[in-house]
Length: 424
Image (cartoon, rainbow, N blue to C red; front, side, top):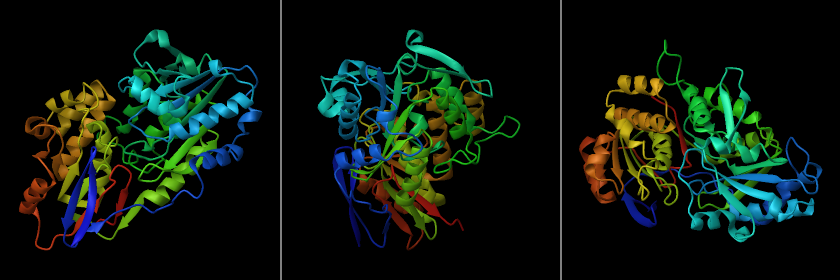
């Protein structure tokens, strides 16, 4: 009997399945404290000089960091960044922390305090406004003619430091790096335009084959985001790579591209898990709060998890989604139940939330997905999935489609683990 504990929101479910294989990432425990990891990386930047050779006294600095849905370890690295900026002659009042919301909701005061950690009440913090023209500035256009507008605070400042964490992304390949700027602090129009690259040309149709998890080379979404982010001309990057229990495992500092690529390589080494053959059943936890704070965040675990399952197989997804869908327009997209009409609607009025909804529906069409969440049966079924009240009920429902002696996998941290399967 295989026994393990699976996180669900702030709860923990016990899972007992005979013969199941548990898919877990490679473990790289922190070799030194988080603070020492940050200081070490700052002293040895990749592809750029250290901060004290970039920043001048009395300059104004904007530090971009992620919102609460993407834990990065900001309470550890922001104080050290500010400490180093102070040593460069930059006063606290000339430092701004800008929360890279993209198109996400604003943060509460409590969430701001959590992001800032010991800096709370000392350093000014603002949320990005993607729809307020007064808060946006047009930088220019990309080679393909895409306008790039970003938050004025990364334009009207002397120095820009981008921070975040590197993890898998379901169509940009990896998060972190350039995504802190686009979509992080970009206008809604720019966000949508870069993400629209997920599709093949209309005459071909469908999703671009390289716009998938863990792929950067030839990925049109990554290329569009990177080209847009370069226009900001950020001065420095700090990205973490985390352990599944949210400790800082490694820190990469330096140039926007060099430091990010190094983080991506480590992420691939740690979080890709080989699987000898596709499973009949996968039981997937997002990893608990905040990875399942809403469905848009929880979708990552669904996207990664189906890689472990044969076409037509069953996936049980544990995703509390206490904050609902994560955006008010997300659920509206499920009025399109036919993939062709859904794609047509996206092409005519693209939204990032619509892309996530489209991806959800495609997975629910190719696999049987049983969802354990706070959503009711009507909402769950509209998204193409089956509602289960708890893990036991989900396992009972799954039995009807399983062969005798099914091959089963359990993924306790589905929001970070990418199964790599040799398809039969």
